[in-house]
Image (cartoon, rainbow, N blue to C red; front, top):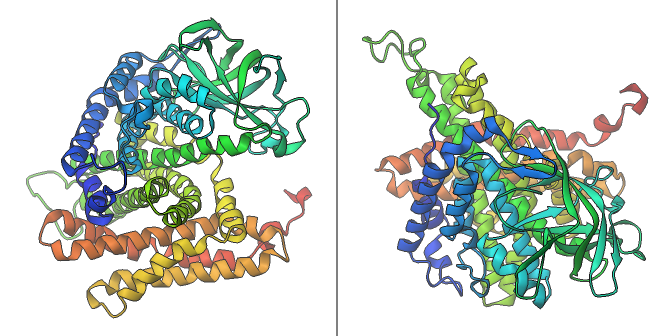
Length: 589
């Protein structure tokens, strides 16, 4: 029977033992974040996720959403669960107190989102999109827009959705055609069709606030001519009361591989009334505030599904009897041993575990920098932390979602034939998580953002290199940590060499960056996780008399010895350059 229990012990370890959350809570505005408060938040998050959302996980997948003449009805139980979510104040966790929020750290919210989406990814998309809309509006909206919309989005009373993609343009937003015509009263009439709009229409809230990319009549071509507009499903008066239905409607919903409980909509804007958010022709700048929030959130989706798949693989491996352990029968009274005794099953489970714990550390390390970038009293410290967030955002999105797919695929494999059938739940994890490397910018785009923009153009690599090199240098000659530090140092050397080599080649051959980007991103991520596992080992070695820390050390050793060696292969691929990728004539494909 499928199981789900949020790993609170590992959450607390990563927060307090690895990343020193006690000191982190000294940042301005976090005075209320005592250990007792954080433990209570995590425990209540776990209870809501496991008791309210997880029971709807499979039923929502089987029922899906219902579409009837523009109206979308969510699966049974979603409306009641959403009402409990709002009543509990969960959407407001990180929102500003001036908008009715709780002002919690991003580090805590990431763990809440992991639990929420691990229990029910389809459901988790709704509040996740609303949070992204809130972030964009809070950063770039006018004072009037913030006063009107921010409190309702922060509370979850209203939902948010972003409308970027059109049928003829996905990643290349410069091709979008949706028009925004001035109406003479400060508002605009938006006309166009958007596709692949997650939670574009639903029955969970009385209003939905769309953030829509469109072009003004005199806009320049390409991305320099895109503006961002706030378009409510129902028009709102100055007091926040709902008025007439706006001219925006759902034309259809997509039939998809997974996340069946969340509608993916075609949205039609037929002269819909909207208001410019931020400056004209600067829409991407404002939209990326939401996009970057969503990219990290999507990375958390990958982590969430990885954790859920791992838990179910372990539960099955403990119970499924098949064959005998290579060293002899574990229990002669039983007809066979549980498959968890077999080395190949252990290999799969340990890979799942190492990737999942590594992804959690990477996400929270990035969240820590995000908090510092917003809260620290020193402007220079904030700027450095912001650079780190810029650098790590594509890594978190791409690596965590790649790992989500890898771990879920292993989960199916551990169960064998039973993983391929619906009753055991593993096949749904694989179907649901498969979208995550695609939406909010494909992982190929994330890799190009990391290498082409953040490393080569903005030269942000040193923000990662400095702490890693410092850790390696501090522990040089430390025999107890050598088994962790030496593989880290070797992987970092390969990453540095790859960075240097690509930088030299890219100026001469423009294809080099694109050909290397995905392998470079993976090498970067593996090295970053190795750094965090080495730090986790440093913390755990003095405490290895207890089971939790012994397990952490065993996982760290597995990662260093069975996962990190992939760095050498990735370096070799990067060394091969663009030649093997670009050599074949297009007509030969």
